[in-house]
Image 1: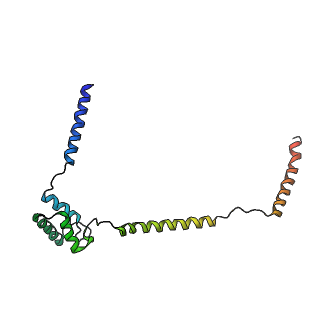
Image 2: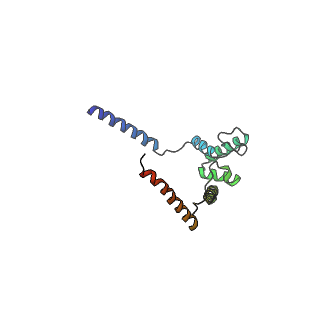
Image 3: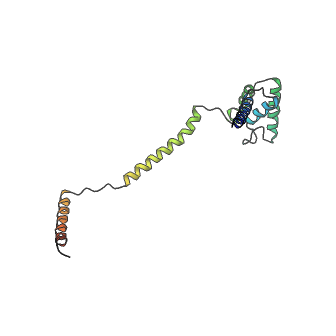
Length: 160
């Protein structure tokens, strides 16, 4: 039993050590930085691909410029800022969010909720409410019920 616990403890320590080592911050190499930056930039020719994945000549030029800027010692944010200055936020595959971005998501949801409210209101209006009989109709119904009950009484009391 103690041997099993010792093995479990060693396995847990190994897993925790591996997780701690992988989470330990390390300085990214120039190639890793170039890959990360070019995967965040949109190709101006292909528009649906990142600069890293695009085979276009313009993407190759952008990659070369990123390599040059990394070699010069510029930070990732400075390099992205240079491309944003040239092409706008559009060049980023994940553009920064703003209040307008939230509005773009909320307007369709609000329109959907308003449409649903209109449909529910119309469905409720289309369902007729139960009719309330007038006093004259109510008296006639009571008389009819009393008459039918009077007809049923002899059958209930009579022999079969």
